Length: 426
Image (tube, rainbow, N blue to C red; front, side):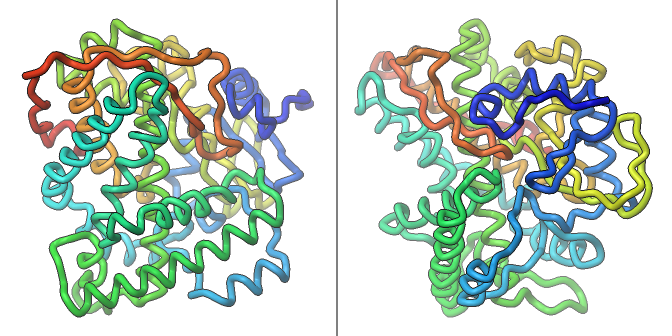
């Protein structure tokens, strides 16, 4: 079947990808993007297969749309520590080693221990949002800051260094969408080198004075008969944590607020029903997946989208499209937290590469809205809904801004109760 002329990397398609995703799911065979060297798949069955089957697919293609490495890029990379594949773009047995070493840093005990600090940050930011008044940007004042501050605290980053940490985080994800200039790409690689140098200082501080935090867990991590992580390995994992534990959670919280603004009846019930709020978060993960796609490569002949793929092909498994597959999710375009299979989405991946930080992301989102509900009686959108813009990134679904009108709760209202652990464990 010939492809139509829809460009999935056009800024309007990035803003509203849903019609393209329908075309992708109906397309016979993978959808070729020769300009970036990937072929897209979007059916739930195919995406699940590509994400979970490590015998037929390798993850060693990276999480985004990478350009051909130029001599200029190689020169910048040579100035920093080696960029190692550890968790995302890696396969067993190496991936198994890294995951076993890192999993303790995201254990249920560790995540539960972070809940009080997450709540304090959420309360602080909700108060700042209230003080900002009408037309305050929810993305800038709350959704960006909460996961950034949580991850920064866990990695031993002082609050005074948060502006630089935010810049490094933004520069880490900008190249993933394949929509920036070569000059901007070089700038991003230089920025990651700065992040590496900064984190080496934090690592040495933790080695001299260990603390009960995530960075110390990484430094001390080891399994039987295995060596601890090296500096380049720790840096690579910190880089993954920064992107997967910060930018994506920002996108989840921002999208969840937008879904509540679009569905006031959902918001009203979520305010008084913690179980329902947890389902709201899951439905947001399905409907507005923070990571829209991730890369794989077939090892041999496979069948995808009713077509045999015999040549080795770089595949972009479009999670955002799979989560809207009508064969799995009835009335998939509808935002329905009560659907029976609300947790069957692929937003956190599948198989051995399932996101290690999924429990922390769920915790942050649940605590965020408990504290927002405790602070504000209601929310309103202070902008034209159709004018909301998304960052030019084909891989990450990220609102640029979300201006709010808010009404504060009457004085004396208490803050939310701690979330139940079952609500955040995947």
